[in-house]
Length: 135
Image (cartoon, rainbow, N blue to C red; front, side):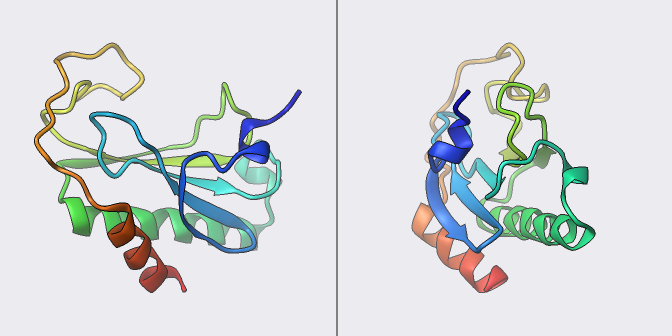
């Protein structure tokens, strides 16, 4: 079975090193939604060495910090599920009180219509801020 995160980038590439990559996910209603994807195919955090686990979480936390600074969300959601795509990746999702699913997870049934209020961080500014934070 072909893994979609092994065969495709998984979104617009913002930053990467030899161990992981950060991509922007074009999900309407969710500006700044990013994924941190581990490069090699593993399913669980405990499949990684301690050093690799620490590195991955440092990247996840840097992505969260950059998004918070750029978009000022009401809340941040971090999730590592992988039930449908069993390739280790973290969702880093800025949440706003007026988003379609708030306060429920973005995978729940929507509670309101999506409002395009122009809230969006440019992927160029996210990429530049990530490079500054991680390189």
